Image 1 (cartoon, protein in one colour):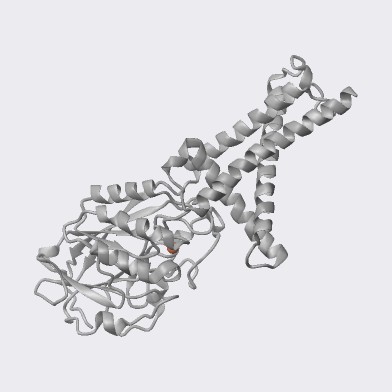
Image 2 (cartoon, helix red, strand yellow):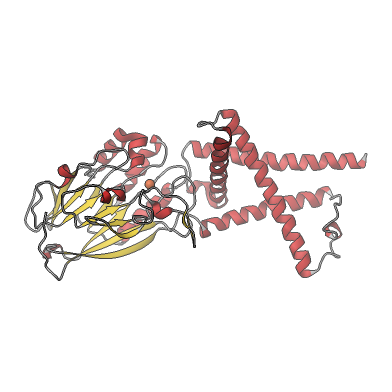
Length: 415
Ligand SMILES: [Fe+2]
């Protein structure tokens, strides 16, 4: 009788624990569905939410592969949520019991703890001891989750500085500093608070001009407004220029364009502006450089002619292109440097193995950094946000700052 009661009690503890975690998983799912991954989630909520998203992504991916379905039904999604809650509970219990056994082995306090003195023996555990242990296990799991933002989180943008020497760069613009932000991917895996801090970091650099190179939202059009209007706080001497990325085409081209128009930031896809000490202009002027842009390679149309034809031969040209693979296309026009994103630098880069996923057709060639191509040098930023997995590893988010200098050797430029 007593054994049966203990069994029921144990079952009740397990059911209660899994139920509590299931509620949290469903709450996170609700948060994800409404696009709220934000500072309001709190210190514990944020890592939990990330863990949830990571597990959800992995289970979603696995079930799609196993079941061969592209879209999961609501019932299947619910099953995934229950599976996640049960896994979290099991991980919690496992962590705690392993920790206890390890500490007993290390410090030899097994005898002092009658509950835990025979590791190979299966013994009945009192309700209180089990509840304490399982709850502590969940706490340990949450602590590991809290360590996640420090170890793996995407929320730590680093500043990378380059100096580019370009022949016939106007003396009046010598030392011009451009800051590039790309692939912010605002949405369920990145908080608005973080993006606001990235904007503050950018402003602290006191840039002359800011380049935005695409993928401003991640997966839903309801994020477009906040994901773009966050740039309204950008401050620079000459303003901001932008091009579109594949996600902007996929999620909502019309809304994205409307928001940039409201922001007063020109989208220069298959177009250009001329930058002189007097500012940005549609027309060519003395001491100006051309800043051109092309549309996204995957989802738009690349029109080099619209972007670069008619630019004076001696005028330096900078190109903005979301996708760096554009550098491999056939382009008859000279380009002195190209700013790109899209690859996220690989996002998860395992030492000795490399990036887990590539969104470029050219391996490591345009993954990140200064990448020489057939007709230009691409500066490829790892970007700010994340895609697919809410994780960056060995590949921190990046704000790029480039200082333009007039090259010492004045080799004549050609078209
Ligand atoms: Fe991206």
